[in-house]
Image (cartoon, rainbow, N blue to C red):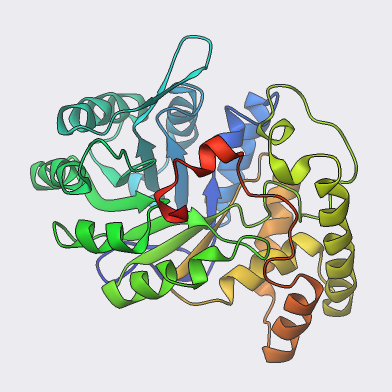
Length: 330
């Protein structure tokens, strides 16, 4: 597995990371045995970056990762954890809390669930407009000094917030959505991250399966995030799948699958970008790993971007209420 370094001060990780949320939450029913097998397969294949959140399944995902890591050397995995999202017993969303005292409380529970002495990368899931980012980052910096956290990350924040946060403590990486159909970071956020020496871990590289080549015109369960996603709604979905068909022709010429080409495109945008693939099954993991073997030249990238031009996707990446909460979209 190829390696990349997250920013100027971050850890070295596999060139492809594994996003683990869907193994516990938000994408319909999950299979625990298959999830554990997929995690084990990822580690065996050299994937070191595992991305989770303490609110994924209300702690379930962290416990799942802990089980997958049993019997393996601790340094086999770089565990990235998001915190701050509040949920109730039924899974309902209750807002965010990234006050300094909450940061340290959340970290204590995460350390216990994961069964580790230190969290490799710790980040607030979203910016809380009621709490200065300096206070949140300062609290994580305290945890770094105490040895409970190794690196600080951020998620879905804009350029100005990146600058303010990095003035408090070095930031290893920004986790943010980036794909052929979500390219907004290219205007200001990505250049600012590069200026500050901050890496990017890109989630949603297949737009939650939309541009994987496997979606088709199917319905989703009520507990599946995509049932509420604008890009999967009637009208938008059909237009977006037309883009996927255009990409299919390019993928065929490259002797690759659509998913592999979409992941390879993200990888080709810079050595400072690490795509996170949300594979929940070994079959999808094996396909994603094939993206690392695809070398795209300028002509290939031009063909890919001709098939899916920037801004061509129908529908926003989140519903309007969620979009309004994103510092990265302001």
